[in-house]
Image 1 (cartoon, rainbow, N blue to C red):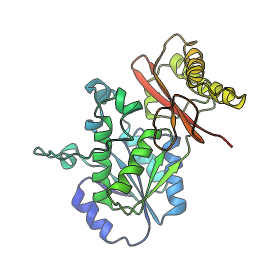
Image 2 (cartoon, helix red, strand yellow):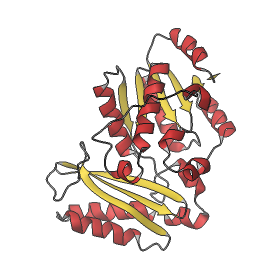
Image 3 (cartoon, rainbow, N blue to C red):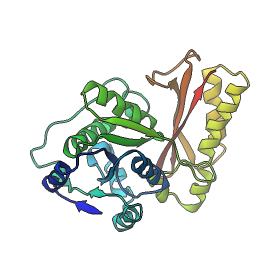
Image 4 (cartoon, rainbow, N blue to C red):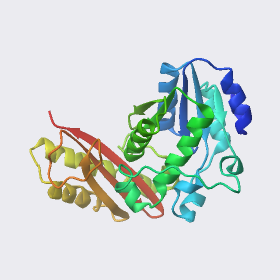
Length: 280
Protein backbone atom coordinates (compact mmCIF):
# COMPACT_ATOMS: atom_id res chain seq x y z
CA UNK A 1 0.00 0.00 0.00
CA UNK A 2 1.27 3.43 -0.99
CA UNK A 3 1.12 6.08 1.75
CA UNK A 4 1.08 9.72 0.70
CA UNK A 5 1.50 12.59 3.14
CA UNK A 6 1.94 15.42 0.65
CA UNK A 7 -0.42 16.50 -2.08
CA UNK A 8 2.05 16.66 -4.97
CA UNK A 9 3.23 13.07 -4.52
CA UNK A 10 -0.35 11.87 -4.49
CA UNK A 11 -1.17 13.83 -7.64
CA UNK A 12 1.83 12.31 -9.42
CA UNK A 13 0.61 8.83 -8.45
CA UNK A 14 -2.91 9.69 -9.62
CA UNK A 15 -1.64 10.72 -13.08
CA UNK A 16 -0.44 7.16 -13.63
CA UNK A 17 -3.87 5.68 -12.88
CA UNK A 18 -6.33 5.55 -15.75
CA UNK A 19 -9.09 3.24 -14.53
CA UNK A 20 -11.86 3.52 -11.94
CA UNK A 21 -10.60 4.79 -8.60
CA UNK A 22 -12.74 4.66 -5.47
CA UNK A 23 -12.26 7.08 -2.57
CA UNK A 24 -13.30 6.52 1.02
CA UNK A 25 -12.85 9.77 2.99
CA UNK A 26 -12.45 9.06 6.73
CA UNK A 27 -11.23 10.64 9.94
CA UNK A 28 -9.61 7.38 11.01
CA UNK A 29 -10.38 5.19 14.02
CA UNK A 30 -11.54 2.68 11.44
CA UNK A 31 -14.26 0.12 12.20
CA UNK A 32 -16.35 -2.42 10.29
CA UNK A 33 -18.50 0.32 8.84
CA UNK A 34 -15.45 1.77 7.11
CA UNK A 35 -14.41 -1.70 5.99
CA UNK A 36 -17.78 -2.17 4.29
CA UNK A 37 -17.10 0.99 2.24
CA UNK A 38 -13.63 -0.25 1.33
CA UNK A 39 -14.94 -3.63 0.25
CA UNK A 40 -17.66 -2.04 -1.85
CA UNK A 41 -15.05 0.11 -3.56
CA UNK A 42 -12.89 -2.93 -4.26
CA UNK A 43 -15.90 -4.61 -5.88
CA UNK A 44 -16.70 -1.67 -8.14
CA UNK A 45 -13.35 0.00 -8.79
CA UNK A 46 -9.93 -0.99 -10.07
CA UNK A 47 -8.15 0.80 -7.26
CA UNK A 48 -9.16 2.06 -3.83
CA UNK A 49 -7.73 4.99 -1.89
CA UNK A 50 -8.61 5.89 1.70
CA UNK A 51 -7.99 9.30 3.22
CA UNK A 52 -7.49 9.82 6.95
CA UNK A 53 -7.72 13.39 8.17
CA UNK A 54 -9.40 14.64 11.34
CA UNK A 55 -10.82 17.81 9.85
CA UNK A 56 -10.76 20.60 12.45
CA UNK A 57 -13.15 22.95 10.67
CA UNK A 58 -16.10 20.56 10.87
CA UNK A 59 -15.97 20.54 14.68
CA UNK A 60 -17.85 23.38 16.33
CA UNK A 61 -16.36 22.53 19.73
CA UNK A 62 -12.61 22.29 20.31
CA UNK A 63 -13.16 19.73 23.07
CA UNK A 64 -14.96 17.46 20.60
CA UNK A 65 -12.09 17.77 18.12
CA UNK A 66 -9.48 17.02 20.77
CA UNK A 67 -11.35 13.96 22.03
CA UNK A 68 -11.99 12.43 18.62
CA UNK A 69 -10.47 8.92 18.73
CA UNK A 70 -7.19 8.36 16.91
CA UNK A 71 -5.47 5.04 16.12
CA UNK A 72 -3.32 5.65 13.08
CA UNK A 73 -0.98 2.65 13.44
CA UNK A 74 -3.90 0.25 13.78
CA UNK A 75 -5.65 1.99 10.89
CA UNK A 76 -2.65 1.53 8.61
CA UNK A 77 -2.41 -2.16 9.51
CA UNK A 78 -6.13 -2.54 8.84
CA UNK A 79 -5.83 -0.92 5.43
CA UNK A 80 -2.89 -3.13 4.53
CA UNK A 81 -4.91 -6.19 5.54
CA UNK A 82 -7.78 -4.98 3.35
CA UNK A 83 -5.36 -4.60 0.42
CA UNK A 84 -6.14 -0.93 -0.07
CA UNK A 85 -4.03 0.54 -2.87
CA UNK A 86 -3.21 3.91 -1.33
CA UNK A 87 -3.64 5.97 1.83
CA UNK A 88 -3.72 9.75 1.81
CA UNK A 89 -2.55 10.99 5.21
CA UNK A 90 -2.16 14.75 4.87
CA UNK A 91 -0.96 17.16 7.52
CA UNK A 92 -3.06 20.06 8.74
CA UNK A 93 -0.75 22.59 7.08
CA UNK A 94 -0.97 20.87 3.71
CA UNK A 95 -4.79 21.04 3.77
CA UNK A 96 -5.13 24.44 5.44
CA UNK A 97 -2.04 26.61 4.91
CA UNK A 98 -1.62 29.73 7.02
CA UNK A 99 -3.41 32.08 4.56
CA UNK A 100 -6.27 29.70 3.83
CA UNK A 101 -9.59 31.58 3.46
CA UNK A 102 -11.83 29.68 1.00
CA UNK A 103 -14.79 27.52 2.02
CA UNK A 104 -17.62 25.61 0.35
CA UNK A 105 -21.14 25.90 1.75
CA UNK A 106 -24.38 24.10 0.85
CA UNK A 107 -27.40 26.18 1.90
CA UNK A 108 -30.52 23.99 1.91
CA UNK A 109 -30.07 20.33 2.78
CA UNK A 110 -27.52 21.23 5.47
CA UNK A 111 -29.75 23.60 7.45
CA UNK A 112 -31.61 21.32 9.89
CA UNK A 113 -30.64 18.32 12.02
CA UNK A 114 -26.84 18.30 12.44
CA UNK A 115 -26.54 21.63 10.69
CA UNK A 116 -28.80 23.28 13.26
CA UNK A 117 -27.29 21.66 16.34
CA UNK A 118 -23.67 21.89 15.11
CA UNK A 119 -23.30 25.32 13.46
CA UNK A 120 -20.59 25.40 10.80
CA UNK A 121 -20.25 21.61 10.72
CA UNK A 122 -21.32 21.11 7.12
CA UNK A 123 -19.28 24.01 5.81
CA UNK A 124 -16.30 22.08 7.15
CA UNK A 125 -17.51 18.82 5.61
CA UNK A 126 -18.19 20.24 2.14
CA UNK A 127 -14.91 22.14 2.14
CA UNK A 128 -12.74 19.14 3.00
CA UNK A 129 -14.61 16.78 0.67
CA UNK A 130 -14.26 19.29 -2.18
CA UNK A 131 -10.53 19.48 -1.51
CA UNK A 132 -10.20 15.70 -1.45
CA UNK A 133 -12.17 15.40 -4.69
CA UNK A 134 -9.94 17.99 -6.38
CA UNK A 135 -6.70 16.44 -5.10
CA UNK A 136 -7.53 12.78 -5.73
CA UNK A 137 -9.95 13.06 -8.66
CA UNK A 138 -11.75 9.78 -7.92
CA UNK A 139 -14.32 8.27 -10.27
CA UNK A 140 -16.37 7.01 -7.32
CA UNK A 141 -16.68 8.01 -3.65
CA UNK A 142 -18.25 5.93 -0.90
CA UNK A 143 -20.21 7.31 2.07
CA UNK A 144 -22.09 5.53 4.84
CA UNK A 145 -25.81 6.01 5.34
CA UNK A 146 -25.36 6.43 9.09
CA UNK A 147 -24.42 10.04 8.34
CA UNK A 148 -27.62 10.48 6.36
CA UNK A 149 -27.59 14.25 6.17
CA UNK A 150 -23.91 14.32 5.25
CA UNK A 151 -24.60 11.89 2.41
CA UNK A 152 -27.39 14.08 1.03
CA UNK A 153 -25.32 17.24 1.37
CA UNK A 154 -22.46 15.64 -0.59
CA UNK A 155 -24.87 14.36 -3.24
CA UNK A 156 -26.30 17.87 -3.63
CA UNK A 157 -22.82 19.40 -3.78
CA UNK A 158 -21.67 17.00 -6.48
CA UNK A 159 -24.66 17.93 -8.65
CA UNK A 160 -24.41 21.66 -8.01
CA UNK A 161 -20.63 21.92 -8.55
CA UNK A 162 -20.59 19.56 -11.55
CA UNK A 163 -18.22 16.98 -10.10
CA UNK A 164 -17.90 13.99 -12.43
CA UNK A 165 -17.94 11.57 -9.50
CA UNK A 166 -20.36 8.79 -8.61
CA UNK A 167 -21.47 8.98 -4.96
CA UNK A 168 -22.15 5.47 -3.69
CA UNK A 169 -24.27 5.19 -0.50
CA UNK A 170 -23.49 2.19 1.70
CA UNK A 171 -25.75 0.68 4.40
CA UNK A 172 -25.31 1.24 8.13
CA UNK A 173 -23.28 -1.48 9.83
CA UNK A 174 -24.47 -2.29 13.33
CA UNK A 175 -23.29 -4.06 16.44
CA UNK A 176 -25.27 -7.16 17.45
CA UNK A 177 -27.16 -4.91 19.87
CA UNK A 178 -28.31 -2.67 17.00
CA UNK A 179 -25.99 0.22 17.89
CA UNK A 180 -24.73 1.86 14.70
CA UNK A 181 -20.98 1.46 14.37
CA UNK A 182 -19.12 4.74 14.80
CA UNK A 183 -15.61 5.85 15.65
CA UNK A 184 -17.12 7.80 18.55
CA UNK A 185 -18.30 4.54 20.13
CA UNK A 186 -14.71 4.08 21.32
CA UNK A 187 -15.21 6.95 23.74
CA UNK A 188 -18.21 5.33 25.43
CA UNK A 189 -17.66 3.65 28.77
CA UNK A 190 -18.77 0.02 29.07
CA UNK A 191 -22.20 0.84 30.52
CA UNK A 192 -22.97 3.53 27.95
CA UNK A 193 -21.80 1.29 25.10
CA UNK A 194 -24.34 -1.32 26.18
CA UNK A 195 -27.07 1.23 26.88
CA UNK A 196 -26.60 3.07 23.59
CA UNK A 197 -28.47 0.30 21.79
CA UNK A 198 -31.58 2.08 23.07
CA UNK A 199 -31.19 4.54 20.17
CA UNK A 200 -31.90 1.89 17.57
CA UNK A 201 -34.67 0.43 19.71
CA UNK A 202 -36.34 3.84 19.72
CA UNK A 203 -36.12 4.06 15.94
CA UNK A 204 -37.48 0.53 15.54
CA UNK A 205 -40.37 1.38 17.88
CA UNK A 206 -41.36 4.18 15.50
CA UNK A 207 -41.12 1.76 12.58
CA UNK A 208 -43.43 -0.67 14.37
CA UNK A 209 -45.89 2.15 15.03
CA UNK A 210 -45.85 3.15 11.36
CA UNK A 211 -46.46 -0.46 10.36
CA UNK A 212 -49.49 -0.43 12.67
CA UNK A 213 -50.91 2.63 10.92
CA UNK A 214 -49.66 5.48 13.13
CA UNK A 215 -49.49 8.67 11.05
CA UNK A 216 -48.99 11.35 13.71
CA UNK A 217 -45.50 12.86 13.54
CA UNK A 218 -45.92 14.19 17.07
CA UNK A 219 -46.79 10.74 18.42
CA UNK A 220 -43.91 9.08 16.59
CA UNK A 221 -41.45 11.55 18.09
CA UNK A 222 -42.94 11.01 21.54
CA UNK A 223 -42.55 7.22 21.17
CA UNK A 224 -38.88 7.56 20.21
CA UNK A 225 -38.02 10.04 22.98
CA UNK A 226 -39.85 8.03 25.64
CA UNK A 227 -38.01 4.86 24.65
CA UNK A 228 -34.58 6.48 24.63
CA UNK A 229 -35.30 8.27 27.91
CA UNK A 230 -35.71 4.92 29.65
CA UNK A 231 -31.90 4.95 29.81
CA UNK A 232 -30.76 7.30 32.56
CA UNK A 233 -27.63 8.70 30.90
CA UNK A 234 -29.19 9.26 27.46
CA UNK A 235 -29.92 12.90 26.60
CA UNK A 236 -31.94 13.30 23.39
CA UNK A 237 -30.67 16.27 21.36
CA UNK A 238 -33.22 15.98 18.57
CA UNK A 239 -35.66 13.62 16.91
CA UNK A 240 -36.39 14.36 13.28
CA UNK A 241 -39.00 13.02 10.87
CA UNK A 242 -38.31 14.48 7.46
CA UNK A 243 -38.73 13.98 3.75
CA UNK A 244 -35.98 11.47 2.94
CA UNK A 245 -34.71 13.39 -0.08
CA UNK A 246 -34.99 17.05 0.89
CA UNK A 247 -34.76 16.60 4.70
CA UNK A 248 -37.60 19.10 5.10
CA UNK A 249 -39.23 18.42 8.46
CA UNK A 250 -42.73 16.97 8.25
CA UNK A 251 -45.71 18.11 10.32
CA UNK A 252 -47.73 15.23 8.91
CA UNK A 253 -46.84 12.12 6.95
CA UNK A 254 -47.20 13.22 3.32
CA UNK A 255 -44.10 11.70 1.76
CA UNK A 256 -43.59 8.26 0.21
CA UNK A 257 -40.26 7.88 1.98
CA UNK A 258 -39.27 9.46 5.27
CA UNK A 259 -36.02 9.68 7.20
CA UNK A 260 -36.34 9.21 10.96
CA UNK A 261 -33.17 10.40 12.63
CA UNK A 262 -31.93 11.13 16.12
CA UNK A 263 -28.97 12.59 17.95
CA UNK A 264 -28.33 11.48 21.52
CA UNK A 265 -25.69 12.52 24.05
CA UNK A 266 -24.16 9.90 26.33
CA UNK A 267 -21.96 11.80 28.74
CA UNK A 268 -19.34 13.47 26.53
CA UNK A 269 -20.16 11.33 23.49
CA UNK A 270 -22.61 12.45 20.83
CA UNK A 271 -24.18 9.71 18.68
CA UNK A 272 -26.46 9.85 15.65
CA UNK A 273 -28.55 7.19 13.94
CA UNK A 274 -31.41 6.90 11.48
CA UNK A 275 -33.75 4.63 9.60
CA UNK A 276 -35.56 5.17 6.30
CA UNK A 277 -39.20 4.21 6.08
CA UNK A 278 -40.97 3.69 2.76
CA UNK A 279 -44.72 3.60 2.25
CA UNK A 280 -45.74 1.02 -0.33
